[in-house]
Length: 138
Image 1 (cartoon, rainbow, N blue to C red):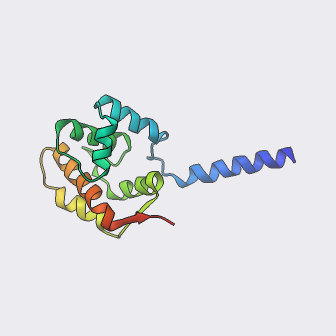
Image 2 (cartoon, helix red, strand yellow):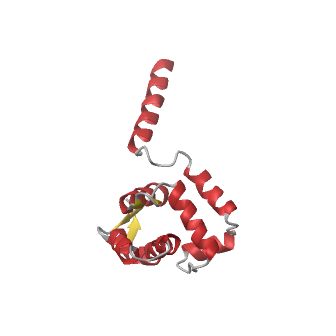
Image 3 (cartoon, rainbow, N blue to C red):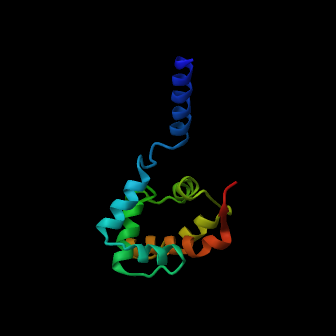
């Protein structure tokens, strides 16, 4: 019985980790905490950000860039990856969005310079439009 339990536990971990792509952050909560700390993002500011009152400030732009780089949905070489953000939203927040929603946000922001302004615009679009275009996954 003991050997069977070990095999089942190992199998469960294999299934859990096999579902996540290789680019997916190993410890997403640590990445979020690191980005909040590096950019002095207070709990009050986090509440504002996630309640669709996200303000365009250098501090918030740097925070969004930190998340993009460390969660691997954005960098200067590959650009913004909507498909990766969708995976993160599904895994982290259990959210499913309408087809094309995040891609539409990316399209709206694609020509904005500099890159931190572009990524901010995309993320703001996703956060603000998320109530209407995304729902809790079942």
